[in-house]
Length: 170
Image (cartoon, rainbow, N blue to C red; front, side, top):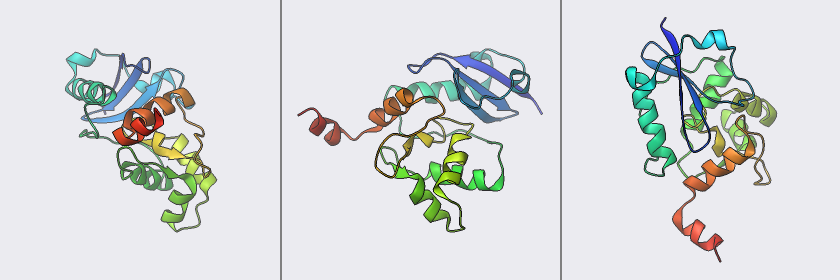
């Protein structure tokens, strides 16, 4: 294992990227709810000196500028079987779309509750890349986001279709 980290700037404040060998394993905001212990992140390197980080930084910068709708990165999030299933479902939510925790629980069709889905979503180690910001409450309201609701709102507005944005202006 070759675990390492780097810190990059973004419009949402700094992001810590973590990789193990050739796969991205974490993207964390500074004030992330469940940020791993610093020792588990490995040594700090410069993004430009590492192919995994350099590519991730380029794709995140492009996405956050509104120039990219998805990511093409090798990722390897660490979690249990249920978390992996939920995180896989998050990657299927289309850009600009949202689903509720209850809808995800129903799609799992294994007795998982909306609350359990919420717990898995809240432990997503690859924020932005695995789009947990696209999950909303059953009433359409923004609910918990490990990076904070301000960031969740920013990401949802970034992805909002142009016709919806235009209609909101009037």
